Length: 595
Picture: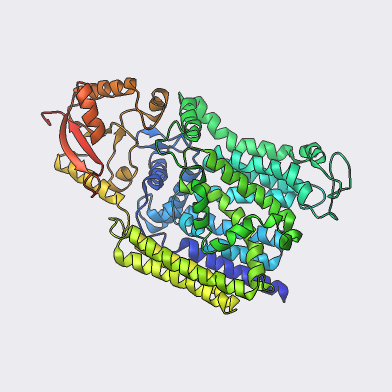
């Protein structure tokens, strides 16, 4: 009976996760700029056959590993082929991440079950399925959900391999394979997200957090127990983790592609150095973010269970969770090291923390289980006061959020009120239900807020993309100037917004390739004089060769450049990209004769 109950609950979780991760991916807002890059590269891979070295328009796309492009292309071959539509549709672009999100929920549930037991495993799955991180990244064509899946699977396989007294070679191979796939999703980030925390856990936290009665073999002493095991023993036991088949598989999966690119693309090392080292050091970023930038983002991504994040993070040090100290120590190393490393980087973006959300969710599971399924953890008067404070804070945040977003060009007032109101109703209801000792009703309301966020938020998001206006404004201006598909359109500065080719079928070239820019440029905020001079010279050569060449350039930079350099082109149109009075503009340049 228990076995049937387990499989029934698992089936419900799979169906629920599939709905949460797949609902509406065929519609909703248009793909963003970065999403459209992979989608456009996948489209060109299908149409032109550029698989090993993907291409974005006329240039190689080798700055990042290609798994995301390959997955979208494979999805399009199946999904769009069956539907008889041209590659690549929005559904095909988003489907791989939706599937990865479902699998990630199941891996989290499996880890929760292995670490804490059946009930906690089910709870972990439901918490992961309704988290903001799962909802958001499952509906995005970015590679983040696939990256998160393989990083989570890497940690899950390592934990399973080291669960028994003797390290399991089979699960170690799974660890190395998952590690390699994470690298193919977004190298070299997994190296720093996976390897250091596992070293910290193995050498320091494993002997410090294991149950004293557990017995583990080491190279130093067979049958050593946690009571006498120390970091020296663990250092000596590291060779037991070095699976030869696993390492060979790792090198085969994630080593072949960069080697092939290195042998076939000139200057790619300079590009990789600028892409990875330049971003981390801040040389390639003009938007410095504070060290604590990711902390509120983590709280947002684990919602609607964000209130349990604080206690969950320090649970490894708290007496009520001492019987789960070993698992919590493992998760603590993963989460805190990942957060610390990402915070060190000067180049910060919200989606970078996706891969460290699973350990934070898993650390919260014992706390949520204790609060909802065991005896009251705190006196009733404290619980009531805390619930009252929660309701007040939620109401205040609702008014603050509406005040800050109201009037923004990308937010519809009606959508804003509906989305915020429904979410606040669920969360306030959960707090009130817990206050009156209706704990199951409180938990149900928290879980129900996930579908509410998805239904209300995703439906309203279709009307919130202000960047579409920029694409349409530039496309319209080019059309008004008589630019056709036969004409050459060149972007002078910056990177081509991928929505131009993906949605408008407008091929815009870059004046310099990424490799050329990487060799001449030292930062994003400042362009060296040599690069500015080279830009003017190259524009002159292109316009001389083909008078029907048009250039797109940032208006402020053009005004500066035209004052110091003899520009070979004239301003044909100035396009306002935002509705604000002092918003950004671009200029369209071409031959003065417009011939």
